[in-house]
Amino acid sequence: MPVFDSADEAEQVYAAFFTHITTHPDLRPKFVEAGASFRANYTDPDSAVSIDASVDPPEVKVGDEARAARVDVQLFMSADDGHKFWLGDLNIPMAMARRKVKIDGSVGTLLKLLPAMQPAFGMYREFLTQQGMADKLSD
Image (cartoon, rainbow, N blue to C red; front, side):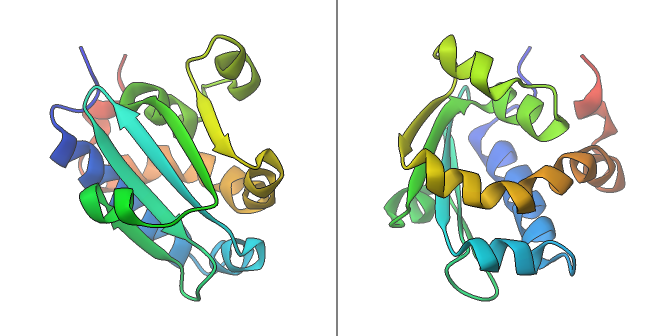
């Protein structure tokens, strides 16, 4: 059974989490320092969320607005794999080798975002719990 029941739910959760991490006092400067933008394109359900960290504060967009945004890098994966990614349970190199995750754009640009993204992995589980979505954490 998929983690998210609908595209709206997936976009709502990811947008709220992305907003949470891009406004976090420790992480916002790291995103801004990276100065890059990316979009996560999810399937099952089809949804999209983007972060533009070339502006301060970074801008988060969802749905058609995210799809229309000009970005430096795009990631393509299932919403469930996106969920696993933020839990820190998805091995990106292995997922790329198995074609579960595809990247369009500069991997170097994506790597600039890693200093901001890595601490966020530990925040996702707590974020879901605080939002009353602890049920999304069970397998």
